[in-house]
Length: 160
Image 1 (cartoon, one colour):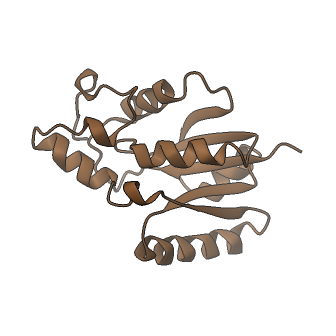
Image 2: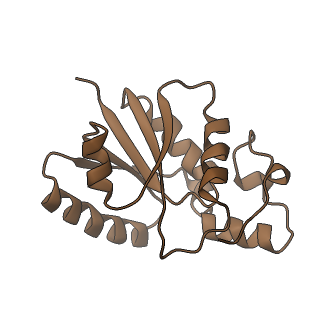
């Protein structure tokens, strides 16, 4: 049976921390679906199409990584795609507490789907999309915090 993991998130934008988690997880899974959440309650800087294009560019040479989007529950998306694993990265103890609660609720809703957590490498601990977005909004150079294949100058923020 194929081991499929879903890596859900808003990825606004996709960072070097996200990239590193996916690359490391490729040794654990046969396929990883990076699932960009379309959350109507969350204001995005980059459009859904732009975020998907950025991530697709990063993994264009890795056929085991797919990029998709979804609305609604992550466990429903997993079931629809035959995924038995939800992949998440942890930077801090606060991340752990937040992700643990979500994982427990997901498990209660879909007992056959496991949450798998990978710790970020220490140098990526301070990197998160909110900080990167703030750098971009303020006209700073955020290039060291996003994958090398993403040239932020190619993408305009939409402030949806």
